[in-house]
Length: 428
Image (cartoon, rainbow, N blue to C red; front, side, top):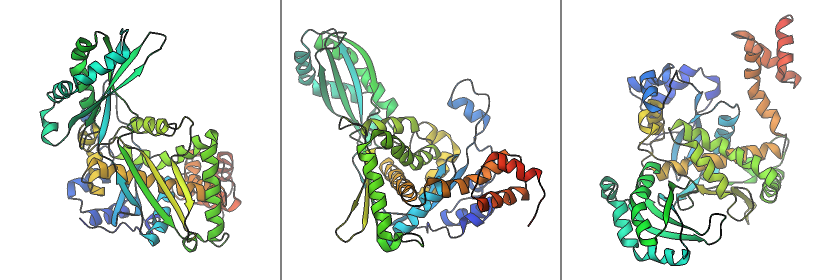
């Protein structure tokens, strides 16, 4: 399916008008349109089957980011998030990126790790070699538990063994099953495989197996994105493109060297990624855990992105990080809006979904760095946040826009000011 991801004047439309446009662009049928048009797409019955102790459902705003062009293909990106400015920033930076061809992405294969912890061995290095001696047997045993995955070309492909010779509980040996999970996130698959080989590992090592669990540091399952902006593209009335490029690079370097800044910098990246993960019913906690662990892989917490100046003066941004996401299993299949989100993006594989997510994260990061290095983060963010403030102060109907207009004109967005405006006289 070929679509046009540009969404001109989308902010000025009503939610119904936006949905009407989206339905035409991505080809929603009547049932899908109805699911998006009214709340309650996730029925209480379905929710009750997903988790325990269900008492209701909790909704988040579901939006779409436009203008994304990824590997030459236009993509409209669903995002479920409560924070203002995120969707606008990602869309705007995607719009500017189109001048240089949008985002180029790639990824590694969908490999996940399952860890099997072995204690009670006095010869940990000997135990390591014993496990490796039986590697083919253990791989075959692991793969015997999921014939469907094997038929799709996945399955356990290799075993690594790590030795920790001196811990407070004695020597520890940890076997890693390296599993190709195809289009699944893979947690259940790798956990089952780890449990299936535990007994045999005890036999060949003479030790005691404790934990048998996946690792969320999915460092073999990476997604990458790259983007380029020219000075001409970035130029504004207040700042030259060259000034903005230098400012973005300075802001990035701050995050690269200082973990206090890097934590906020990476949170901004996840502002873009998490809403895509949530909208598609994937495990955003797993993605967050892997992201922040990966940011420490060099022994110090640092930026997940890089920003550099090319020989011709263009700004070039890159991101590479773990992206354990799936198209099958879990809420991705059971939540009706998660299935719709995947349809809107027209993704064909989990790897493609991961690449879209990191492209959005890179765009979000650029939006934040651009704002921070020029007018500051609050100017644009608070203007978009003003509607929330007005509603929190009790504004309804036409009063919302009137209060927002007044606060933005005063460059002062505060709940107490909104309350005062509502209590005072109305003017034009």
